[in-house]
Image 1 (cartoon, protein in one colour):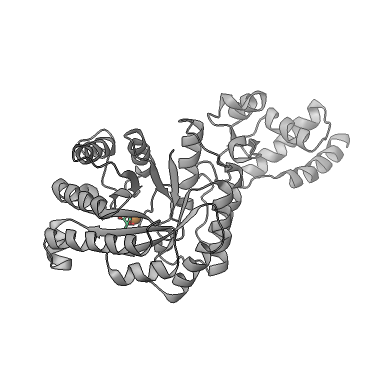
Image 2 (cartoon, helix red, strand yellow):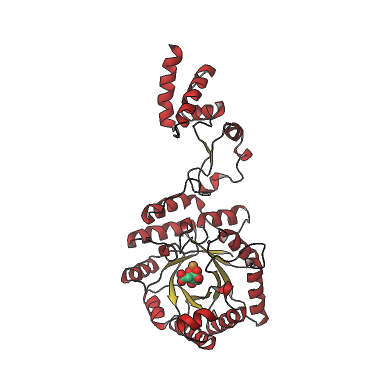
Length: 383
Ligand code: HCA
Ligand code: CU
């Protein structure tokens, strides 16, 4: 069954300036758990003592989700993760010649030995630990290095191989597409008699993270990484809400997700990360189900599907209509019905004129202001 791994507390904290205090991390984890997320990557315990303590606290919190630590391919990082008593351990190490030669001053054989021995060490210390190995920058690394490192990792005890598009390099429809990559790696490992679970970790540098992740899923990936608001290094990774809604609504993936908790989760993360939710952000943004132009609103109030391909109810939201310079009679009628106010045609026209003039100043009228406009117009119409 497909699993979502939420990395808001690890990759998300790699957004410049973003840090969640321990109690906020716990609140985020609780909501992720209520939604039904399978794996929560809680942090990299080596980074600070506070992160270490938070990972430990989350692991002991009795969540349904597996709680995981991120770790370099070093024994000292594994020890810290083990101290936190995590259920899941994500170990990463690059296998690109350029990085190995210039940054680590190692050849690929030494690197693979190190990866395998660290994984064996972790598995020996905690046999039930779910271990993921990620060849960092997988898709730009020599394919043979990826295969050799992945095979060694699986033979050493890794359960999951993650394919990371660390720089958002892959583009659908080109030679460098994620579907082909995931298929090829799966087949190559299968030919060696190895069938680890495949995870995908897609960065959004060119805006294709979600499309690539879905391509990975179609090619047989069983775990997809995401973060709230797509937070992460540079342009971040796959957005959790977009991923979960697409999988549930369009791929009818078997799940027990309660997506109605997503808006609460997004507001919590936005408040404490200081990253605002853009009004036009898909699914969660204020405008995601709001109709503006008179023509649109006229049709949408009759039946929202005229201008919506997704039912907002999937995340517990409702369609709405914006009251501004674009409004038409139907927009006003919709709003008056919300307020249980009866009005005849001349009054509605008067209200519309008023609303349009306010809209032209670049401001929207909300329902409480509309009440005042109705009162004002009633007097003017009578007079
Ligand atoms: C990082 C890079 C990483 C690792 C992913 C993973 C990536 O910040 O350490 O460990 O699965 O994008 O490659 O996020
Ligand atoms: Cu990443």
